[in-house]
Structures are given as C-alpha cells and as structure tokens.
Length: 482
Image (tube, rainbow, N blue to C red; front, side, top):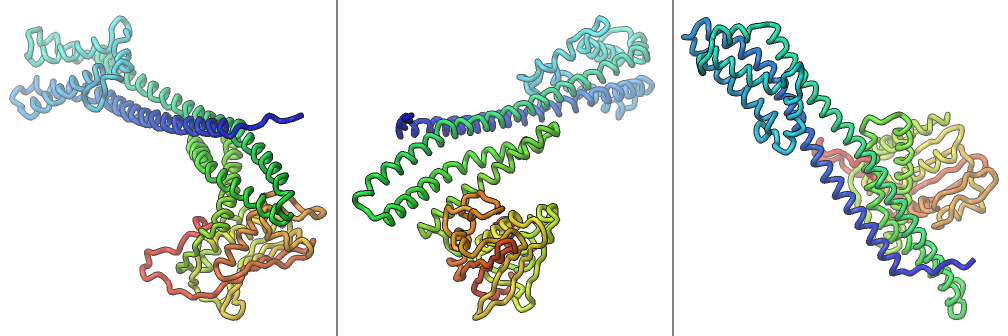
C-alpha cells in the first residue's frame, strides 16, 4: 500500500501550531499560578483577620468593664477606643473588602459567611448589635447603659457570639482548603494537557517528519546510484541523518524541559501512591529521552568542531566519588560491588575539563552498571606513562568478543549482537566519549573477553594543578559536569 506523500509546508504549519499551543499553555499556566498565589495570600489574610475578631471581642469586653468601673482610667479608654476601631475596621474589610489586604473582588466569597442566618440572626447583625450596645454602655449614643452592660456580660449571649465568630474562621478555612484542592486538580490537568500536546506533536509532526526523511533518503540513494560511489553515498546519508536528528533534538529540548518541569512540580504535591509511581515512570522516561537528545546534539557539535575543552582545577578523588554516588544504590541493588582505587602517585588536583571528563566517567560507569549482573565494578585512576594518566572502569559483566570491539566506537551502532548480550540504545555514548578523549589530548580504548568482563581505559595528559586560593571556591560538581 502506497503511503501518502508528506507535504513539508504542512509539517511546518503543524510545527508552528504546536509551538503556539505550548507557548499559550505555559503563559496560561503562569497566569493561573500568579492568580492562585494571590488568592492564597488573601485567604490566609482573611483567616487571620477573622481569628483576630474573636480575640478583639474579648479584649473590648474586658476594657469596657474596666472603663465602666473607673471612668478616669485614660489608658483603658485609649486602649478601648483603638480596639473598637480595629474591630469595626476588620469586620468591614471582611464583608466589603478594600482594606487590610483584602480585595473587593473576593468579598462576595466571604460575605455569605456573615450574612447567613443562624437561629434567626446573621453574624453581621450580631456584630452590629455588639458595637451598638458597647457604644450605649460607654455613653457614646443614647440608651439604657445598665441594660446594655447586662447584655454584653450575659454569658449565654456572649458565648453564642463567640461561637459565631469561631464558625466564621472555620468557614473561611474550608473555603481556603477547597481552593487548594482546586489548584491541585488544575496542576494535574495541566500536566495531562502538556503530555497530550507532546503526544499530538509526536503523532502529527515528528512521526510524519520521520516518514518524510525516510522518503528523502530513498530518493537520495536513487539519485546517487548513477553518479557517486557507494562510499560517498553512505557518507552523505550519514551526514544527512546526523544533521536531521541533531536539528530535531534541539527542537525537542524545550518540550522535554517543560514536561520534566511539570512532572517535578506535581510530584511535590500530595498525590495518591499509584499516581506518584506512574509520574515517577514518566519522569525517568523523560530523563532517558533527554539524555538521547543531548547525545545527538553532542554528535553534531563534535562534527562541526564546536566543542571546546575548558580545563580547570579538579580534586580528582572527590570528583570521582560524586559520580560513583549517583550509581551506588543502583549497582548494589543488583548485588554487585562498586570499588574505587586512586593511585597515590597522582596529584590531588588535576587540570581537566570537568564537564567532559565527568561525561566520559558517567557513560563508562553507566555501561558497566547496565551489563554487569554479578561480581564487581572497579573505577581506577593511576599514572600511565610519558606524562599521562589513565582512568579505567573494569567490570565482571557480559564482555565483548574481540571482532566486535571496534564497532563500539562507531556512531549509531548499538551493542554488538552476541548470544545473551543485552541490546538497545542509540549507539552514541561510547563514540562521543571516544571523540571527547581525543579532544582532551588522549584516547579511549577497550579490553574485553566475552563472558569475563571488560576494561575501558581513558588515557589523558597529566596536568597537575594547584588548589583554588579561596577555600570557598569549590571544585566543579561531578553531577553537573556529567
């Protein structure tokens, strides 16, 4: 069955639409996050102010009695005036907004708490009655002072008023909790939407693009059959493939970072165990895909000569320890022993490019961990000869037959197919490390016996370095370098 021809312009339009969707989604998520943050701050302020109302009511009653018993006590009168003013102002801010950090726009969500009837009266009416009777008792407005005082000190009435104030705090807390739950649902929805966008990108952009590239390769091979040798054709195909995947990898970096960011954000929230486990699988898959993308980008940079080696002082033994720490639990879970051996003949500080050196060590250790199921893995640093030193990673794993060892350092060639040997991967890690070792003035070699393990050796120029003058200046992190 003949496949439908892919229109490059159509693919380009789909790509622009996908980018627009991602940009719009990220912008919308930012706006929602800012609105949610503002809502959380206001909800917290409202709960604090409502709780303060209860304490103010108690303080007002105590001060009013003190003023009643001793009208000449100016300190009590001043404190009572301030407390009553703050009580009234807080109530108005809760009901109307526009003061004490509470907005008018969200006042409606709080007002019903104060205007809902309980036992035939609203909390708003109780507050107004409390303030009015207090003013009568103090002689601020006409009325029966003794009757007002009796009402204010009637425990049945006072306890009911305090219970109503407590209930207002409880209702506002319930509102805040409901908003938090809504935000969690929005975060989960955002993650699902991001995954859906990435799926549609893969389905309607990258998969068709892959088919288009395959068609282009077929056409290229057909046109080169008449004019070019087989070797030239292979070189052109490989260059086209590398350029295509490098360009695609750079375009994939942004959605991958967005995906990892949302997964990390959701994993920090309270999730059911099953959902957290599934999101962890998504996180690990995205990390693996990001590593593949980074490898393809490195291949392009190496081919175009854009990678520069930047040496700086590195504390060799601690640097190796940091890389080993990232694999310790993974290797020990398999029952394999992880060892380190750094020769005393080597200086404590050496001058290397920490990023590229860490990348080599990380890749060699990753391969050893993948193909070793029993025994031990040893990372050894020792003086070699002629002013050079060697980093060796030795394992007791599956091993590689002699006639397949050269293929390890050819790009896009996955693990040689041998009985019982694990296969898979992009075939880029070891070729990249081989080229990086060459750029650093050294070389990467392998010694292996099928069924008895392997030793990968990176021989590099030995440049001793001085420790940084400032003790606060730390050696580059191996995890970041790798």
